[in-house]
Length: 395
Image 1: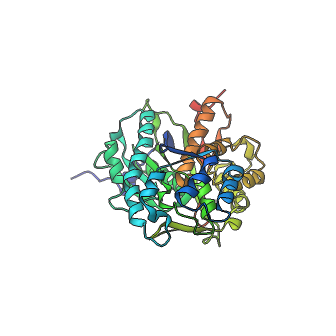
Image 2: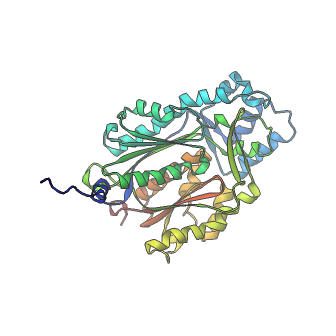
Image 3: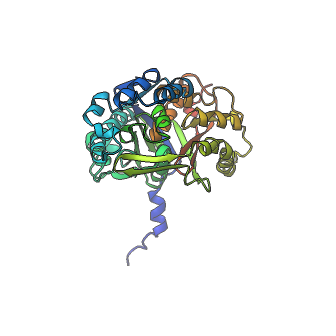
């Protein structure tokens, strides 16, 4: 008589990791083309042939130099590229195919630059990656950037791939949320998250009311994170942040506040700026309370936490800082990334997480618990509660 087979629940338990997912390594990369905010208005008006349009240069200069708190941004597109593609700045000419062709080649290349840094810091071979999540707002191909990236990195043919498109500024947070679930529900999983943003899909002439504002804020960049659970069984691995809990909240009635869509002229959308600006500050405490209370942290003081917040702009950060009563310096990682890179949509939060890691390693924040916040279309708030492992805390 044969032995009694194990149950499905037994099999399920055996397949799951024992312990929380953790960020094991981070890498970032920027394109070579850097434009300072002081130069940007001249650059933009020159390549779009809009010097003659009344008020454009002055408005762009005001936002770039006085209102953005950004010093420089990086771009894959160059003046030479725009000259070759005049349809990018002509609202009467379809340009989506040309933009997507450029992005199809550039997105995986930039992603590979960031991912290679993360893999090197991780200390294990790329072939140990079991899952790959790629997110971008600059792409619409299948096979897509995930396949090309896997080839560039030499990942196994069996790597389990997921593509995320058009999640706007919350894309990085959404990808990390998914990575946590994959790592904790697949024993031995090592998930590579690569978030890549190129504004070549959105670069255009001043044909829309919000175009000038967007041109003053957004830049290009790629961030990569390796996520896994049970890192203690691999001595080479060193958890940077434990990913304790995640949540996502769509603020009711905000579906129109941030929208995105692919059109024959590239990636377009709308931003209801006056409605957008107070949304994070007005709703963040409820989201934080809902996330922290089940963990027994409901009474924590906000200044006792460390913070990794998506810096959409200072118009988002400043009201949020006031609403939470945060001390000066608590959002330093977010402000540093905004200053040095601008808003890189979904990849920005990975840059912030890396900057927060650097500050904690080099300066010692002293906080054991922290929160990562991402903001995206709708108005969506992504919340992740983080824990600093003992090996990273400073005495």
